[in-house]
Length: 354
Image 1 (cartoon, rainbow, N blue to C red):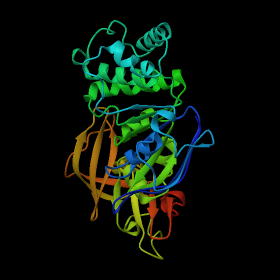
Image 2: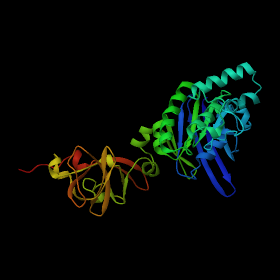
Image 3: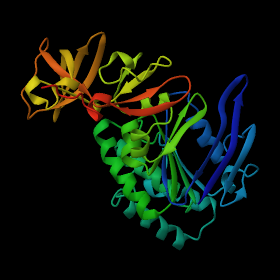
Image 4: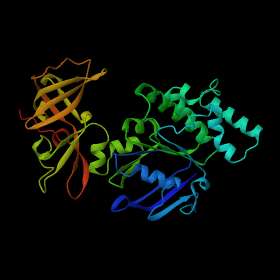
């Protein structure tokens, strides 16, 4: 199903929950709807499902306006974060529920349910009740029940929120494979950026009711279009005046320019580790965090505290140690625009005087 949304708005009393949101979703894509709590994610999802009516705007499925259609008329499967399974029904009957409502024949119903039991890895659990299943298994039942009527669109509202971390990690890969096999257009709401980056074809980032940016996880990480997106995705350090950093002195000459600097944009180490020492500046190691495969280093440069990564294969640093710091690039923004800028001294190194 191809989805078109234009000028979507939703008010709850005086609260403007969704503000003039527009987007397109290609058929078969898996979209992660990401953002902080209260950003408007679930409101957009519920309007797509027909559970809430927009105050303004259009929702089209395959070019057809669906604003007036009831939820059951939109061809949608919905998976909730709390499973919403019928406690008195077996796995088989929970999956079959939507098919019974549609009055599917018993032979066709059984064939479809068993197909989904196999697809979702629930073989052998058909006669069990929800209380006899793990959290991950209950969520698989919820997925199977949503897919049973063969919807054209699958909507998932934080589907892994109620599951522990280890099982959640396993279900991410499983969901990605399932959606690819079924080929259904899907949108899932999450506040977990790692989850969205790992699972989604594209991410839509919502904040205060507005759609900040839509794109592939890599494009959004590499080229954020707003300061909020830059600060929300990935780890980073915010600098109020980038002109205080070596190599960026000219970046804030016209107006005060702030910078968001990701850990991978920063290099830290002893003086002998740098080929061009002239482009570095002095720093002091403030704190070290062991991340398993690397160190996260907090380093003080003047009045700024920056964060960067350091390989375990390099000599270990210690708190209080004096080091050299090189900021390779930074995401810059002011009240007029935002842009990525390379360290000027690194791009155009200072001449060596002999």
